[in-house]
Image (cartoon, rainbow over all chains, first blue to last red):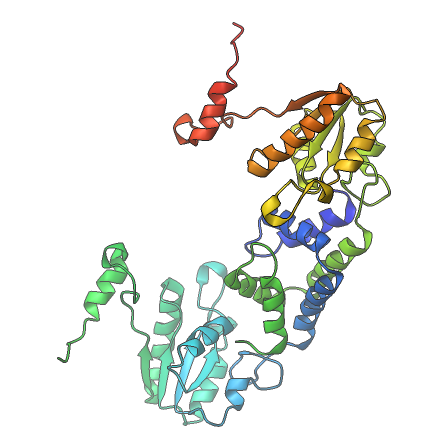
Length: 199
Length: 199
Protein backbone atom coordinates (compact mmCIF):
# COMPACT_ATOMS: atom_id res chain seq x y z
CA UNK A 1 0.00 0.00 0.00
CA UNK A 2 2.92 2.37 0.61
CA UNK A 3 5.76 3.23 -1.71
CA UNK A 4 9.06 1.36 -1.64
CA UNK A 5 11.13 1.57 1.52
CA UNK A 6 8.36 2.17 4.04
CA UNK A 7 6.37 -0.81 2.73
CA UNK A 8 9.52 -2.96 2.82
CA UNK A 9 10.04 -2.06 6.46
CA UNK A 10 6.37 -2.75 7.30
CA UNK A 11 6.70 -6.17 5.62
CA UNK A 12 9.91 -7.01 7.49
CA UNK A 13 8.51 -5.89 10.86
CA UNK A 14 5.32 -7.88 10.22
CA UNK A 15 7.42 -11.07 10.11
CA UNK A 16 8.50 -10.62 13.75
CA UNK A 17 6.62 -12.68 16.36
CA UNK A 18 3.68 -10.83 17.92
CA UNK A 19 3.85 -7.92 15.47
CA UNK A 20 0.65 -7.67 13.41
CA UNK A 21 0.11 -5.45 10.34
CA UNK A 22 -1.14 -2.49 12.43
CA UNK A 23 1.79 -2.62 14.86
CA UNK A 24 4.22 -3.00 11.96
CA UNK A 25 2.79 0.14 10.38
CA UNK A 26 2.92 2.02 13.67
CA UNK A 27 6.53 1.02 14.31
CA UNK A 28 7.55 1.86 10.72
CA UNK A 29 6.16 5.41 11.02
CA UNK A 30 7.82 5.74 14.40
CA UNK A 31 11.15 4.78 12.77
CA UNK A 32 10.51 7.24 9.94
CA UNK A 33 10.20 10.14 12.35
CA UNK A 34 12.78 8.89 14.90
CA UNK A 35 16.24 10.36 15.31
CA UNK A 36 18.82 8.93 12.90
CA UNK A 37 20.99 7.94 15.88
CA UNK A 38 18.20 5.86 17.45
CA UNK A 39 17.56 3.99 14.21
CA UNK A 40 21.27 3.33 13.73
CA UNK A 41 21.47 1.99 17.30
CA UNK A 42 18.59 -0.41 16.64
CA UNK A 43 20.05 -1.60 13.32
CA UNK A 44 23.44 -2.10 15.00
CA UNK A 45 21.90 -4.00 17.92
CA UNK A 46 20.20 -6.34 15.44
CA UNK A 47 23.47 -7.05 13.64
CA UNK A 48 25.50 -7.40 16.82
CA UNK A 49 23.16 -10.02 18.27
CA UNK A 50 23.84 -12.27 15.32
CA UNK A 51 27.58 -11.57 15.41
CA UNK A 52 28.34 -11.65 19.09
CA UNK A 53 25.85 -13.79 20.97
CA UNK A 54 26.86 -17.39 21.40
CA UNK A 55 25.67 -20.17 23.64
CA UNK A 56 27.62 -21.07 26.77
CA UNK A 57 29.56 -24.27 26.08
CA UNK A 58 28.66 -25.63 29.54
CA UNK A 59 24.99 -24.74 30.12
CA UNK A 60 23.84 -23.41 26.68
CA UNK A 61 22.57 -20.17 28.15
CA UNK A 62 23.16 -17.12 25.92
CA UNK A 63 26.66 -15.76 26.46
CA UNK A 64 29.14 -13.33 24.95
CA UNK A 65 32.15 -15.46 25.87
CA UNK A 66 32.78 -19.22 25.72
CA UNK A 67 31.11 -19.54 29.08
CA UNK A 68 28.21 -17.51 30.46
CA UNK A 69 28.34 -15.25 33.49
CA UNK A 70 26.64 -17.84 35.70
CA UNK A 71 28.97 -20.71 34.77
CA UNK A 72 31.98 -18.42 35.37
CA UNK A 73 30.72 -17.38 38.83
CA UNK A 74 32.91 -19.26 41.37
CA UNK A 75 30.57 -18.38 44.26
CA UNK A 76 27.77 -20.61 42.95
CA UNK A 77 27.45 -24.24 43.96
CA UNK A 78 27.95 -27.07 41.46
CA UNK A 79 25.85 -29.38 43.64
CA UNK A 80 22.45 -28.18 42.43
CA UNK A 81 21.65 -28.08 38.73
CA UNK A 82 18.46 -26.51 37.44
CA UNK A 83 17.17 -27.65 34.04
CA UNK A 84 15.15 -25.10 32.06
CA UNK A 85 13.79 -24.89 28.53
CA UNK A 86 15.02 -21.48 27.40
CA UNK A 87 17.48 -18.71 28.34
CA UNK A 88 14.54 -16.53 29.39
CA UNK A 89 13.68 -19.09 32.08
CA UNK A 90 17.18 -18.58 33.53
CA UNK A 91 16.46 -14.86 33.73
CA UNK A 92 13.09 -15.47 35.41
CA UNK A 93 14.66 -17.73 38.07
CA UNK A 94 17.64 -15.41 38.62
CA UNK A 95 15.17 -12.62 39.29
CA UNK A 96 13.80 -14.51 42.31
CA UNK A 97 17.25 -14.48 43.94
CA UNK A 98 16.39 -17.90 45.44
CA UNK A 99 18.76 -20.10 43.49
CA UNK A 100 22.55 -20.24 43.82
CA UNK A 101 23.32 -23.35 41.79
CA UNK A 102 23.99 -23.82 38.06
CA UNK A 103 21.68 -24.12 35.06
CA UNK A 104 21.28 -26.32 32.03
CA UNK A 105 19.29 -24.88 29.11
CA UNK A 106 17.65 -27.61 27.02
CA UNK A 107 16.70 -25.35 24.13
CA UNK A 108 13.02 -26.34 24.24
CA UNK A 109 10.83 -29.19 25.41
CA UNK A 110 9.91 -32.56 23.94
CA UNK A 111 7.07 -31.91 21.48
CA UNK A 112 6.38 -34.76 19.06
CA UNK A 113 3.73 -32.72 17.21
CA UNK A 114 6.37 -30.16 16.26
CA UNK A 115 9.00 -32.82 15.63
CA UNK A 116 11.06 -32.00 18.74
CA UNK A 117 12.42 -35.20 20.26
CA UNK A 118 15.05 -35.79 22.97
CA UNK A 119 17.81 -35.67 20.33
CA UNK A 120 16.89 -32.09 19.41
CA UNK A 121 17.47 -30.91 22.97
CA UNK A 122 20.70 -30.66 24.96
CA UNK A 123 19.93 -33.86 26.88
CA UNK A 124 23.08 -35.74 25.90
CA UNK A 125 25.13 -32.76 27.13
CA UNK A 126 23.12 -32.81 30.39
CA UNK A 127 23.91 -36.49 30.94
CA UNK A 128 27.62 -35.80 30.36
CA UNK A 129 27.53 -33.02 32.97
CA UNK A 130 25.73 -35.26 35.47
CA UNK A 131 28.21 -38.08 34.94
CA UNK A 132 30.90 -35.74 36.35
CA UNK A 133 29.53 -36.63 39.80
CA UNK A 134 29.38 -33.11 41.31
CA UNK A 135 25.61 -32.70 41.06
CA UNK A 136 23.64 -33.85 44.10
CA UNK A 137 20.23 -32.45 43.14
CA UNK A 138 18.69 -31.93 39.72
CA UNK A 139 15.80 -29.45 39.70
CA UNK A 140 13.49 -29.91 36.70
CA UNK A 141 12.16 -26.42 35.99
CA UNK A 142 10.64 -27.04 32.57
CA UNK A 143 7.31 -25.26 31.92
CA UNK A 144 4.22 -26.56 33.79
CA UNK A 145 2.48 -27.51 30.52
CA UNK A 146 2.11 -30.78 28.60
CA UNK A 147 5.47 -30.56 26.81
CA UNK A 148 7.33 -29.38 29.93
CA UNK A 149 5.81 -32.13 32.07
CA UNK A 150 6.65 -34.78 29.48
CA UNK A 151 10.23 -33.52 29.29
CA UNK A 152 10.53 -33.54 33.10
CA UNK A 153 9.20 -37.11 33.32
CA UNK A 154 11.56 -38.23 30.56
CA UNK A 155 14.56 -36.69 32.31
CA UNK A 156 13.54 -38.04 35.73
CA UNK A 157 13.43 -41.61 34.34
CA UNK A 158 16.80 -41.10 32.65
CA UNK A 159 18.53 -39.66 35.72
CA UNK A 160 16.99 -41.87 38.42
CA UNK A 161 19.53 -44.76 38.01
CA UNK A 162 22.38 -42.29 38.64
CA UNK A 163 21.36 -41.81 42.28
CA UNK A 164 20.92 -38.05 41.95
CA UNK A 165 17.98 -36.44 43.78
CA UNK A 166 15.47 -35.21 41.18
CA UNK A 167 12.96 -32.50 42.09
CA UNK A 168 10.29 -30.55 40.23
CA UNK A 169 9.12 -26.99 40.92
CA UNK A 170 5.88 -26.88 42.92
CA UNK A 171 2.61 -26.37 41.06
CA UNK A 172 -0.14 -24.48 42.85
CA UNK A 173 -1.93 -21.20 43.23
CA UNK A 174 -0.02 -18.12 42.06
CA UNK A 175 0.80 -15.84 45.00
CA UNK A 176 -1.41 -12.75 45.00
CA UNK A 177 -4.04 -14.50 42.89
CA UNK A 178 -7.69 -15.26 43.65
CA UNK A 179 -8.63 -18.85 44.38
CA UNK A 180 -11.90 -18.49 42.45
CA UNK A 181 -10.04 -17.51 39.27
CA UNK A 182 -7.64 -20.47 39.34
CA UNK A 183 -8.27 -23.07 36.63
CA UNK A 184 -9.33 -26.49 37.88
CA UNK A 185 -6.03 -28.20 37.05
CA UNK A 186 -4.00 -25.64 38.99
CA UNK A 187 -6.44 -25.82 41.89
CA UNK A 188 -6.29 -29.63 41.79
CA UNK A 189 -2.48 -29.48 41.92
CA UNK A 190 -2.66 -27.04 44.82
CA UNK A 191 -4.81 -29.54 46.75
CA UNK A 192 -2.52 -32.42 45.87
CA UNK A 193 0.54 -30.47 47.02
CA UNK A 194 -1.01 -29.06 50.25
CA UNK A 195 1.40 -28.69 53.13
CA UNK A 196 1.06 -28.90 56.91
CA UNK A 197 1.02 -25.44 58.48
CA UNK A 198 3.58 -25.29 61.32
CA UNK A 199 1.97 -22.88 63.77
CA UNK B 1 19.36 -9.29 32.93
CA UNK B 2 21.08 -10.76 29.87
CA UNK B 3 24.66 -10.34 28.77
CA UNK B 4 25.74 -7.64 26.33
CA UNK B 5 24.32 -7.73 22.84
CA UNK B 6 21.06 -9.55 23.54
CA UNK B 7 20.19 -7.12 26.34
CA UNK B 8 21.09 -4.17 24.11
CA UNK B 9 18.68 -5.44 21.47
CA UNK B 10 15.92 -6.03 24.05
CA UNK B 11 16.43 -2.45 25.29
CA UNK B 12 16.29 -1.00 21.78
CA UNK B 13 13.21 -3.01 20.80
CA UNK B 14 11.49 -2.00 24.04
CA UNK B 15 11.69 1.65 22.92
CA UNK B 16 9.45 0.97 19.91
CA UNK B 17 5.76 1.90 20.26
CA UNK B 18 3.57 -0.96 21.43
CA UNK B 19 6.51 -3.26 22.23
CA UNK B 20 6.59 -4.14 25.94
CA UNK B 21 9.46 -5.88 27.79
CA UNK B 22 8.03 -9.37 27.15
CA UNK B 23 7.54 -8.77 23.41
CA UNK B 24 11.00 -7.21 23.16
CA UNK B 25 12.50 -10.34 24.73
CA UNK B 26 10.47 -12.60 22.45
CA UNK B 27 11.51 -10.68 19.33
CA UNK B 28 15.17 -10.59 20.42
CA UNK B 29 15.30 -14.38 20.81
CA UNK B 30 13.54 -14.74 17.49
CA UNK B 31 16.26 -12.58 15.90
CA UNK B 32 18.95 -14.63 17.64
CA UNK B 33 17.72 -17.84 16.04
CA UNK B 34 16.61 -16.29 12.72
CA UNK B 35 18.50 -16.71 9.45
CA UNK B 36 21.32 -14.20 8.98
CA UNK B 37 19.75 -13.09 5.68
CA UNK B 38 16.42 -12.23 7.37
CA UNK B 39 18.14 -10.13 10.02
CA UNK B 40 20.22 -8.33 7.41
CA UNK B 41 17.05 -7.58 5.42
CA UNK B 42 15.38 -6.08 8.51
CA UNK B 43 18.45 -4.00 9.41
CA UNK B 44 18.69 -2.78 5.81
CA UNK B 45 14.98 -1.92 5.68
CA UNK B 46 15.41 0.17 8.84
CA UNK B 47 18.32 2.10 7.37
CA UNK B 48 16.69 2.54 3.96
CA UNK B 49 13.54 4.07 5.45
CA UNK B 50 15.60 6.86 6.95
CA UNK B 51 17.67 7.32 3.80
CA UNK B 52 15.06 7.05 1.07
CA UNK B 53 11.64 8.01 2.36
CA UNK B 54 10.76 11.65 1.90
CA UNK B 55 7.54 13.56 2.10
CA UNK B 56 5.73 14.54 -1.10
CA UNK B 57 6.33 18.24 -1.72
CA UNK B 58 2.67 18.73 -2.71
CA UNK B 59 0.60 16.69 -0.25
CA UNK B 60 3.19 15.60 2.40
CA UNK B 61 2.32 11.94 2.03
CA UNK B 62 5.31 9.59 2.27
CA UNK B 63 7.06 9.28 -1.08
CA UNK B 64 10.26 7.98 -2.62
CA UNK B 65 10.42 10.78 -5.20
CA UNK B 66 9.74 14.52 -4.97
CA UNK B 67 6.07 13.82 -5.49
CA UNK B 68 4.08 10.81 -4.28
CA UNK B 69 2.37 8.28 -6.50
CA UNK B 70 -1.05 9.88 -5.95
CA UNK B 71 0.04 13.43 -6.79
CA UNK B 72 1.75 12.10 -9.94
CA UNK B 73 -1.38 10.22 -11.07
CA UNK B 74 -2.87 12.28 -13.95
CA UNK B 75 -6.15 10.32 -13.85
CA UNK B 76 -7.17 11.75 -10.47
CA UNK B 77 -9.22 14.92 -10.16
CA UNK B 78 -7.78 18.09 -8.65
CA UNK B 79 -11.28 19.32 -7.79
CA UNK B 80 -11.67 17.33 -4.58
CA UNK B 81 -9.05 17.54 -1.85
CA UNK B 82 -9.16 15.26 1.18
CA UNK B 83 -7.40 16.45 4.34
CA UNK B 84 -6.08 13.72 6.64
CA UNK B 85 -3.84 13.63 9.69
CA UNK B 86 -1.29 10.98 8.75
CA UNK B 87 -0.01 8.99 5.72
CA UNK B 88 -1.69 5.88 7.14
CA UNK B 89 -5.06 7.63 6.75
CA UNK B 90 -4.32 8.00 3.02
CA UNK B 91 -3.75 4.25 2.83
CA UNK B 92 -7.01 3.55 4.72
CA UNK B 93 -9.02 5.76 2.34
CA UNK B 94 -7.28 4.40 -0.77
CA UNK B 95 -8.25 0.92 0.37
CA UNK B 96 -11.96 1.83 0.08
CA UNK B 97 -11.53 2.63 -3.64
CA UNK B 98 -14.17 5.36 -3.18
CA UNK B 99 -12.02 8.43 -3.61
CA UNK B 100 -10.41 9.66 -6.84
CA UNK B 101 -9.28 13.14 -5.75
CA UNK B 102 -6.08 14.34 -4.10
CA UNK B 103 -4.90 14.36 -0.49
CA UNK B 104 -3.30 16.75 1.94
CA UNK B 105 -1.52 15.24 4.93
CA UNK B 106 -1.45 17.59 7.92
CA UNK B 107 1.09 15.60 9.93
CA UNK B 108 -1.17 15.39 13.00
CA UNK B 109 -4.07 17.22 14.63
CA UNK B 110 -4.33 20.31 16.80
CA UNK B 111 -3.57 19.18 20.35
CA UNK B 112 -2.81 22.01 22.79
CA UNK B 113 -2.04 19.55 25.63
CA UNK B 114 0.82 18.11 23.58
CA UNK B 115 1.87 21.50 22.27
CA UNK B 116 0.65 20.91 18.71
CA UNK B 117 -0.84 24.12 17.33
CA UNK B 118 -1.87 25.07 13.76
CA UNK B 119 1.69 26.20 13.01
CA UNK B 120 3.02 22.68 13.65
CA UNK B 121 0.77 21.23 10.95
CA UNK B 122 0.86 21.69 7.17
CA UNK B 123 -2.02 24.18 7.27
CA UNK B 124 -0.16 27.06 5.61
CA UNK B 125 0.74 24.70 2.74
CA UNK B 126 -2.93 23.66 2.53
CA UNK B 127 -4.05 27.28 2.21
CA UNK B 128 -1.49 27.86 -0.56
CA UNK B 129 -2.85 24.82 -2.44
CA UNK B 130 -6.44 26.00 -2.01
CA UNK B 131 -5.58 29.51 -3.24
CA UNK B 132 -4.69 27.91 -6.59
CA UNK B 133 -8.44 27.82 -7.31
CA UNK B 134 -8.71 24.26 -8.68
CA UNK B 135 -10.30 22.75 -5.55
CA UNK B 136 -14.11 22.78 -5.49
CA UNK B 137 -14.63 20.57 -2.43
CA UNK B 138 -12.49 20.10 0.66
CA UNK B 139 -13.22 16.89 2.57
CA UNK B 140 -12.09 17.05 6.19
CA UNK B 141 -11.16 13.47 7.07
CA UNK B 142 -9.33 14.07 10.35
CA UNK B 143 -9.97 11.49 13.08
CA UNK B 144 -13.43 11.47 14.74
CA UNK B 145 -11.95 12.31 18.17
CA UNK B 146 -11.53 15.55 20.12
CA UNK B 147 -8.31 16.64 18.37
CA UNK B 148 -9.55 15.65 14.92
CA UNK B 149 -12.88 17.46 15.41
CA UNK B 150 -11.11 20.59 16.67
CA UNK B 151 -8.79 20.53 13.66
CA UNK B 152 -11.73 20.08 11.26
CA UNK B 153 -13.62 22.98 12.84
CA UNK B 154 -10.52 25.18 12.72
CA UNK B 155 -9.95 24.40 9.02
CA UNK B 156 -13.65 24.85 8.15
CA UNK B 157 -13.62 28.36 9.64
CA UNK B 158 -10.40 29.17 7.80
CA UNK B 159 -11.58 27.91 4.41
CA UNK B 160 -15.21 29.11 4.52
CA UNK B 161 -14.45 32.65 3.23
CA UNK B 162 -12.79 31.13 0.12
CA UNK B 163 -16.11 29.83 -1.22
CA UNK B 164 -14.97 26.21 -1.33
CA UNK B 165 -17.47 23.52 -0.27
CA UNK B 166 -16.27 21.99 3.00
CA UNK B 167 -17.49 18.52 4.04
CA UNK B 168 -16.75 16.16 6.89
CA UNK B 169 -16.86 12.35 6.82
CA UNK B 170 -20.08 10.96 8.30
CA UNK B 171 -20.06 9.76 11.90
CA UNK B 172 -22.33 6.85 12.77
CA UNK B 173 -22.57 3.16 13.42
CA UNK B 174 -19.76 1.02 11.99
CA UNK B 175 -21.08 -1.29 9.27
CA UNK B 176 -21.31 -4.88 10.50
CA UNK B 177 -21.37 -3.75 14.12
CA UNK B 178 -24.04 -4.28 16.78
CA UNK B 179 -26.17 -1.30 17.76
CA UNK B 180 -26.14 -2.37 21.42
CA UNK B 181 -22.33 -2.24 21.54
CA UNK B 182 -22.05 1.27 20.08
CA UNK B 183 -20.92 3.91 22.58
CA UNK B 184 -23.48 6.61 23.36
CA UNK B 185 -21.66 9.37 21.46
CA UNK B 186 -21.47 7.30 18.26
CA UNK B 187 -25.11 6.28 18.65
CA UNK B 188 -26.07 9.93 19.26
CA UNK B 189 -24.21 10.96 16.09
CA UNK B 190 -25.94 8.19 14.15
CA UNK B 191 -29.35 9.58 15.24
CA UNK B 192 -28.31 13.12 14.40
CA UNK B 193 -27.15 12.08 10.94
CA UNK B 194 -30.10 9.81 10.12
CA UNK B 195 -31.16 9.78 6.48
CA UNK B 196 -34.46 9.28 4.66
CA UNK B 197 -34.73 5.79 3.19
CA UNK B 198 -35.66 6.02 -0.49
CA UNK B 199 -37.73 2.88 -1.00
